[in-house]
Image 1 (cartoon, rainbow, N blue to C red):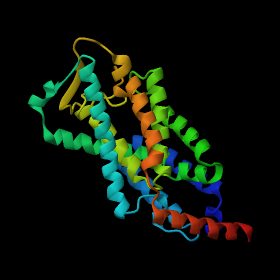
Image 2: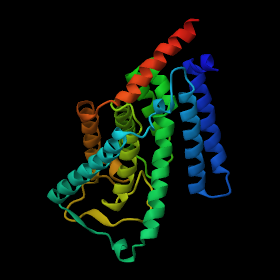
Image 3: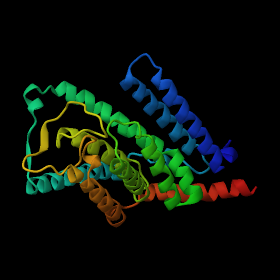
Image 4: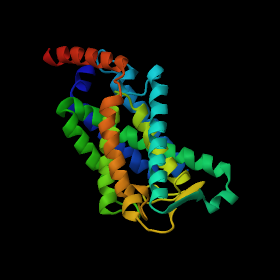
Length: 287
């Protein structure tokens, strides 16, 4: 079995088949969307950890969902990046005639609704990261290198959002850029926790803090809102699709890509495991 798993195309094909199957199957489940998403997350996680851990010289850490001292750092870092991005939006918005205030939904705010949709937003972000930064991306990266793999998966990442409401050309470009940023977060940490954390908090904070739609969707959990008063600069701050439709998001995500190379650090435990796997698999494939 290890000899077959050592072949990159075997891992890629098995994972691709499973991804297509579980997504199709989850849509026909009678338990609702959130349970379908939970099913996909659990099955893909178990399979991905398994297929990476059975490789010669490997263990579960290779996939990138290990728990160690770097895990908390990556999760907190994802939150801080998003909070910094929010601050940029708010300060520039105030400077250009926008108003930052409590949303009218706040008066009838139900924390149980917030918890429910927060869980849903987390599952969606987690699912997308397992699919687009999981075994598929990791396998392509081993075979074709960082640049080609990032571009390929980022384009596919944008394809998954083409059916979203109110999507525009700039929104599509920003989603591709977001795919690049999330992939860079993975390759500069060798861990999935930073892209998962950033992805989740970015989506949650768009709705809760900025009162914006999330990739064209609204979950009605707004606490604050950033709205135009004296001027409408939707080309900068985003429009019907959300903040991801604005030029400011383009600038912020580009900065995140650049700064990730400077400030992120690779997990040494995963690097050691990858070195061991490459050595062991090279011996198997040569035999």
